[in-house]
Image (cartoon, rainbow, N blue to C red; front, top):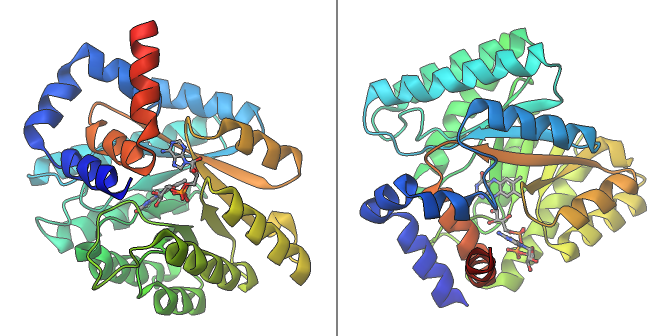
Length: 308
Ligand code: FDA
C-alpha cells in the first residue's frame, strides 16, 4: 500500500494529467465522490444539507500553488464571496484556505496580506478562517503568518491553523500554539514527506496523533480533531471522558463524502462534527490525495463508474 500511496501523491503533482482530467467529463464525474461541485452555489447547497443533519461545515475553494498574483487575488475573491454568503444564509460554516493558493510560493508577503484581509472580513462577520497545512517545506512560513496575524488584537480568534501528526516537530508547535491560544485542527498529514522530518510508519503517526490530541483536549481553546480513523476517535473520546472534558469543548472533523456513517453516529452521540466541503474546478490534486489515503477508493470508483 505505501507504494500506491506514493504513486497517487506523485500523480497529484502531474500538471499534464491535471489539465486533462480537470477538463474531462469523466474526471469531473469521478471527482464528484469527494467534491461538492464546481460552483459556489453547489458548495452552499451542500453546506445547507450538511447543516440540516446537525453538522457544521468548513468550505474549501479548491486550488493551490498559483503562479501569478492575479490568480491569488481571484482565489481570495471567491473566499470573500463565501464569507458574505455564509452570513447572508446564516450557515454554520467557516472557510479553509491554502496559503499557496494565496501566493505563498510567489511571495510570503502577498499571502500574508491576503490572509489578513480574509481574517479581517471573517472577524467582522464573527466568523473564522482556517489555514490548511501543506507540505513540510511550507510549515514554518505558514506558522509564522498565522501566529503574526493572530497576535493582532482585531484578529484574535478569527484565524486558526492545521497541524500534522506525522511531523516530528508537531508536538513543539502545538505547545506553542496552545500557549498563544490559537485554534488547531489536528490531522495525520496528507503529503509525502522524507524520514528526516516525518514518521514513516502508520503506528508511529497514530501514537503521535493520540499524544497531540490529548494536549489539545486539555487546552482551554476549542480545537478540531480531523480524522476518519475509529481508533483515533475512540482514544479521543475516552481521554475526554476520563478527564471530564465535555463533548462540546471540541469537534471532530471529516471530509465530505468520507465515512458519512461515522459522522452521523458522532452527532447522535452528542459530539460536534464539522464536514470539510471542497468545491471548484481545480479538484485534481485534492482528489489524488484522497486516493493516496485509501487506494481501494480507486477500485471502488472505477467499478461504480463502469456500472453507472
Ligand atoms: P487513516 O488514513 O489512517 O485512515 C483511517 C480509516 O479512515 C481508513 O481505514 C478508512 O476507513 C478511512 N479513510 C481515510 N481516508 C479515507 C478516504 N480518503 N476515503 C475513504 N475512507 C478513508 N491533511 C493535511 O496535510 N493538511 C490539511 O490541512 C488537512 N486538512 C484536513 C481536514 C479534514 C477535515 C480532514 C478530515 C483531513 C484533513 N487532512 C489534511 C487529511 C489528513 O491529513 C489525512 O490524510 C486524512 O484525514 C486521512 O487520515 P485519517 O486520519 O482519516 O486516517
